[in-house]
Length: 615
Image (cartoon, rainbow, N blue to C red):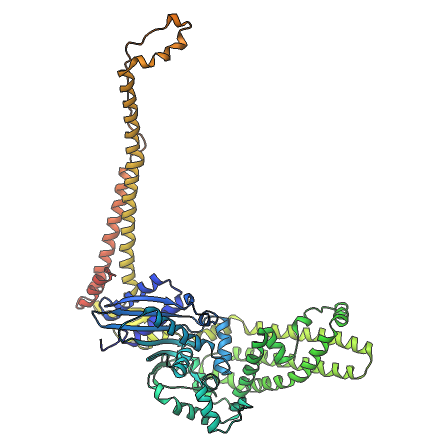
């Protein structure tokens, strides 16, 4: 088969979106078959095998936060032998933490490595005998995972991505030994100080990386929304865009964020990056709490033990070493962190002012952002001032002054910390979250699908919609929902029909048949009694007191009457149930006819309904 089975952007996007639905294998396969039918108007000409990364036997896959699904299409008759690895984009806090470590700091590549390991495992598992093509499908973080794996390990034959987090040459420097060697030789970097790469000219590094990977880049294909926030930051230091890229303006009412992001000075981005690097290095030693302590120097576990002077004195005498370490840590680290934060807050009014001018946020929302970020800076200044005074008191050598100074300082730091948390709460209000959500929509697959729409075919979410001008009015019909209603409705009615049949069988077996069985038992017993009356003379003993007066039973005649069952006639109810099924089938078929009538010149719609019943 010369053309791949997934040959359009639309069907690839819709399959990528399935990865976010957490479907079991059966439902995943069912969704693929319906999507294929909708996009191509024919039954999928191949068998499907679904393999989830969560079922991997490789610890390098399951121990990371990587998630993905392998979809294997195969048919000897149709010469189809294609494997698609759908890597999952950002989903939870662990993924966002990885985003910070990997794509911004360039210090982590575990998910890219897992994507490669998972692909290798699947290839071995399917044990195909023909020429297999391996394609990566990805969105958001997954583009970084798939493309990084491709550049380092030659994982894929082709990659198709939408609104991807771009590759990062700092990340590749740490992950790709050959690339690292070429960088160090070309820019004369010392092997003793590999972090010196962050001091090199970003533009020169970007040019070098694009040239180094240019051959592999030809296999990477991207769809990028000009309104996607990830596209806005993809011009920042570290990121470089490769491959065949198609840009789509998915939200013409807004100008996008790329232009004003490109105007943010590199030193601001570098300060962000240095914070991310510090966080990454520290978190690898002991998690998030360790990272915060490493970056700022404050030991919140220790601070949270102190509420008043009494608890402060207790902590002072029991954890003097930890207090000393925290004071020194704050004194050494906080000034540098605060300087980087001030670089950001110093540009906050300009940055958020651009968002106002572009129509993304209101003036009021901008003021809230600037106010709260400035408040956070003030509280950090307060912590730094407290530490400075504390250091001066300690230098006096007065034990009681040091005791009081330490206790008071820790209580003040806790107040500053609580104020910072209150500012974060203010930044977490519904209006700002709604504004951020609106910006985030341009990162979605559904908005990209809508951007690819034409007058006849469009999308709502990832559902296909057809438009007709039947009767002189424009009518939009959700074809995906219509087919689901038709097929699922008929399936449910068939299930209902089967259940009615089971009810009838149970009624006949458990009620009517049981009644007849019991009646036969009684008739049999009557025949036995009448045929052998002498066998029942013992029944007369209670009426005779002496054995010499024993009697003989010469005959027994049973007068039997069997009354019919009452309140057990379900004929009316069963007839009503059967009629409801027939009415349901009639309704669904009328619904289908109504849809087809809207597209009376298009046999394609009728074909979709016919074929949908065979899925």
